[in-house]
Image (cartoon, rainbow, N blue to C red; front, side, top):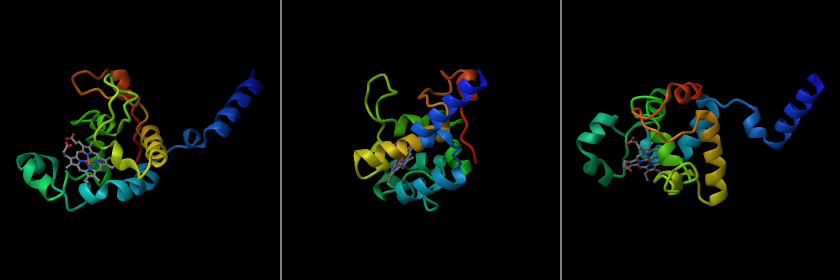
Length: 148
Ligand code: HEC
């Protein structure tokens, strides 16, 4: 029994190296974010509330809301903006309409890079579901890892 389990675990390890190891924000995710997202969501970008006050103004300056620290980013995963990161980055395969989120295109220069980076974000978040706070279940929230 133990042997069978070990063999299965080994097979899983060899077929998907990304799934096998834990991902942390302070490493892989931060690096991807800096490369793909921080030009608009970096330290010069406003807090979410400030962004919302002058949405069009900030967008015209090429800025989104600030997300470049763990504390900022996590608020778009768990709470208060539950699932926002997942809704925006999804390639369409987890959404009812099958439409990619509008930040998916920033994940990479080509489809291969976008898919590779999406896999990293998915693995980091853990439970990849697109629901908002009002619809998400306790079990689904428990599935969120998003480790520092
Ligand atoms: C060219 C600028 C730009 C880049 C690059 C960019 N974003 Fe955005 N992002 C925006 C703007 C502007 C908004 C606000 C408008 C909107 O809601 O679409 C936004 C909104 C978002 C939101 C929604 C926040 C909310 O709940 O209202 C998330 C999540 C997000 N971006 C994540 C990302 C991630 C992750 C990346 C990198 C893969 C990224 N963005 C790259 C400009 C950008």
